[in-house]
Length: 103
Image: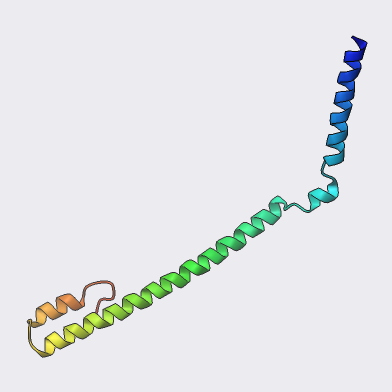
């Protein structure tokens, strides 16, 4: 029985030595990011995403403006050909996304 007890103690000591040999030291832990580092990284990522969203919104507005100019040009062409009455032109020109208040 004493031999079995000693074997168990030897197993426990072996396990403790393995843990001790593989345990992280203070120097090892310094290499990991802290909560402050993670928060700064998160804020940086959020800022970059915000900038990219703003750029995409600007590009979207530019494309919409281009299409709006095409629509206004079509309105002018049909106006010159007198295809519709003046109220129709005014109604179409006042539509979104870029309403023309004066025609």
